[in-house]
Image (cartoon, rainbow, N blue to C red; front, side):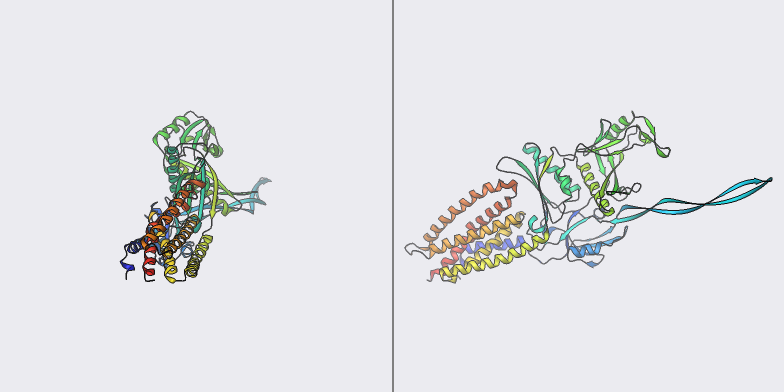
Length: 563
């Protein structure tokens, strides 16, 4: 066939072949590992978080838990929800097998019971020179505190359904959180890059790796940082993203140590972090408050600074015969007092490198208070590990999107797209009264979408609502250009086919450069949120102008040549 001998057609076939390789569609089942909580059971077992630039099919996929097959996220959570503390479990992935020991996080549940006790007292009396013992029984009522320790199991894995292709679905389709941040003051590009690096370190320390952070701006010259966490509902990270994270431990007006460089290690394991076993949770009229704790390691310089400052403090007596230093250790985060810790007398003048940090979380119920306390603890641990950002950020906008809506939209978009292509093909057939124009037009538009998805998967471009809008624009321009080509080929016969195709592509190239010029402002508009739309449109029209539309023109010209 002459069609298969045409260079433009072969160029399209070659690009389609590589697009399918890039997309790599498959029917993979299981759950993909998206992130690992530091110092968790998964981290101790040697499971690694995927690298930032990993493609969806490169994620390690969990196939079974304790030999029970897991096909999706629901089955995974059903397999791990009833794990016992210190239980050893096996996890098999598509790469290897792991054995994890489940770490308990300790929750102290205190209940106050009113109990009644009978106390017998023996009173001795002398009567006529003889000693008589009289037993007196009295009843007292008192409150007794009963403490129960319950383990909250968390193996430290963030997962999602395994990918079925290398197409990276964005926030709108996979669900997650989008946070738009703006510096409180105008800063240069170097500072913005430092802020971006600091946020990446902070989110990694928080156990989040599948995160997109990019510096953007608008047409007015304002700078923004756009943070997208796809595949997870992580509204709680908004506070840690938006805070500068300037942590200081002070005694009176002297800074003992700061978060970041003064701290060499932050404990996250169950034996040195969690709900405080001594203070636990306390019920109040407004709800419940739970106290958390974790230990940190200071640098020798910070420890010596602690010794120099505490060496000048006096001792004061405390309850139970204990003595404390005259001034507490005050913990400040972004200038706000978080907690004040009494310093034991034994620490006066000592260069102590191990310090225990504590704080509190509250909720309307005990469970809510425990979860809030543990979340506050994780955020503070991340801040202490990474230090403060060079500038304070204001949260301009937060979008939390449901993955359920995204999946429904994707299904509807796919079915609607197929119907649209069929409808367009039908309209072209009605207009030109020949399948030789209509059928190649539908096939060319479909190939254009495949090539566009292949390019997006190759470069890791997220397909979100903005990108889908770009795909619709691309298909629309494709049909428009195909009609221009068909009109030229079926028009005046005074020119040969090559000249008529040349005239058609003169119009097409003019429209192509107009589209490129229109997309450049959108690249920067909307604080970078419209960048996906502009990028997808530029990819698509470029693919169409240089690959699919020349192939379409060649095919239609060959088919119509006999006529």
